[in-house]
Amino acid sequence: MAIHVRCGTLFTGNEDIAHKSQTVIADDAGRITHVGPSATAPKPEKGDKVLDYSDLFVMPGLHDVHTHLAYGNAKTEEDIDLYQPMEFRAIRGLFFAQKCLAAGYTSICAPGDAGQISLSVRNAINFGLFDGPRVTAAGRYLTTRQGLTDWYPTWIGVPDTSIGRLVTSKDEAVEEIRVQAKNGVDCIKVALDGFQRRPDGEYIAAFTQEETDVIVTEAHRLGRKVVVHARGREATLYAARAGVDLIFHAYYLDDECIEAMLRSGSVIGPTMTFPRNIVDFTRPTEPAHIKGRIGAVQREYEDACANLRRAREAGIPMMTGSDSGFAVTPYGEWHAREIEIFVNDLGFTPAQALRAATSVTAGFMSNGETLGVLEPGRIADFIAVDGSPLENVALLQDKTRIRHVHLAGRRVEVPPRGYDPRQVTDQAWTNWNDLYTQERVRELGIRPERRQAATQAS
Ligand SMILES: [Zn+2]
Image 1 (cartoon, rainbow, N blue to C red):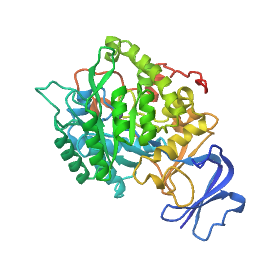
Image 2 (image 1 turned 120 degrees about the vertical axis):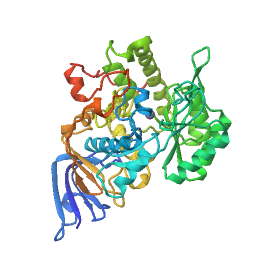
Image 3 (image 1 turned 90 degrees about the vertical axis):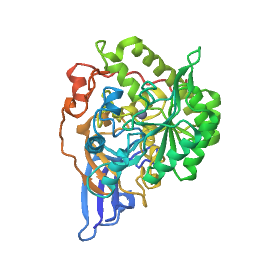
């Protein structure tokens, strides 16, 4: 039984314009067999299903390359690493993965989570036990002393339930990559930023260039992509030179980094939603505000905008990701804010930002060549939106506008179900900040800042 989707407007993910009165046809395996004007589309055969979305905007399902399924909307690092048992975190991860799907995100990458949580969620969905988005899964971050995720004092180390896996030599790094590959991860996550800084404030990379090269070579040899956390210039440069597939943040990149990326093909996942939400939402009474952190985040955001615009103009592709999984970026709430930021602050047109969130970001996902574009041969993952995101990308953040979500042609519905963060997440003694769902932000009377789109030619 095929489905025929009559689309009022269709954005394929392949071009910058949308087309009126189009029909998408998918076979019973969920593969697209035809896309074109409704007037000339093949007629439905007996038993085929016709969906009338003639008042809606149909586009590929959205992709978020940066959603940590095990974090649980955490308010502290300890909540991420310590308090909840791994088994509970996996069940919770599945619950939250469904929230992402309901928001129109049919594909997410979980780049760094404790244990085998993300790949278990992925498998439970792939095996048909539960509905959920397609998940591209990493295991624990490879980290080293001084590195991100090695938070605790040396006498505690990196606990087994942490998102990090401390490797203290190249051999240990290679061994960990082999373990993770055997367990079935799709990609290897590396914490490439260190905590130590030079006198001028620059972050020192956690791993050396040589160590980074060894890690990337082994991961690629085993057919795994590599994604790194690198805000600092040095970590970004090492990653780009080593041919890392995806670099998160890259806020302090310079021309040398851009050249290395152009040579190696590394792309950037800026992940601006996380700092933007911290600046816009958190209040002076919250620990997130201590030690002038908010001012520092705001300054870093502005520096990042300037640097990332240069990278974009130089031709570095950018993927959309939100760092969902923190209390400031709860699942299913702010993923599409990244698209709005791409337009307002990074110089993308709405169409370019939508393509970033679909066909471009699909490029990092497992089987990404079958996703992200509505064209014959690809999988029919799509959403039907009330209104045109080309006219206003912000409306993708309005959950009531995401009218239908389809995975491989099939319409999926996630029952709306709330939860109490005090039971589900918060176990730590102190918190960074409140849980900022869209409802909470409205309740507090906060209006996420809508800034003027940055001038295109900067
Ligand atoms: Zn992250």
